Length: 200
Image (cartoon, rainbow, N blue to C red; front, side):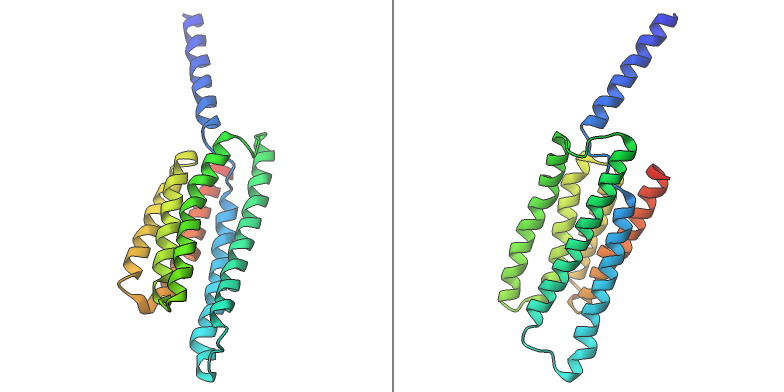
């Protein structure tokens, strides 16, 4: 009987190891919190440019300024995400790079690249009111694909981002608010849940 129980435990352990090896589990909740904070700071700056500086006249380089602002927020979020993910992997004695990492990154970034190119085309045609819906929707699609390789909570975040994006398409005048909700508030909530559930 003891031997049978030992075999069952061994099988359960092997299954657990196989499940972990097929998922990118080192992603840190703290990276989500910081990404949300960066997004809220970026949204505040964008609000100032649009609704405060507008009275004095917005310069013609506003598109470039927005691209640089968005790129800075993205770079800060990615850098912080890499730092906390690397630290998390070290604590757990896991390798940060494995076959699941590549699958995770491809699933996440392919929709982001496609969405980014489409957004640049919309900006070219002065259809800036659709930037917020498109960024939220394509980001949500990326998260949905990547959720196969990480925790289940990522799928809930993906659905929330897609829903917000679709909703913001009907309220184009409030794109910045939806952007702040999706990339700011939702990221902070998601990061807190992930941190408290898996890291604390």
